Length: 82
Image (cartoon, rainbow, N blue to C red; front, side, top):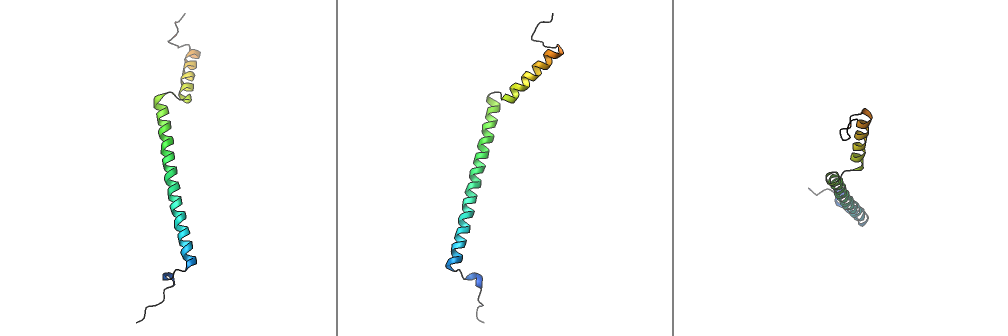
């Protein structure tokens, strides 16, 4: 029995070029995802180290807010009571 013609087995130069373009796009997208992943991890590590090494502005503002609340309530233990 003769083998049947299978159109998907025949790769023309034009379709070969399209396949190569698709593979190149896929490789480039994969590289960009890996770069984005590395950048995201780098940013997370930077934020983590900032939080560990020194107070962030938000923590400073929170400390100021707590201090103001204590002063307004009259319960500031750092100052002597009169």
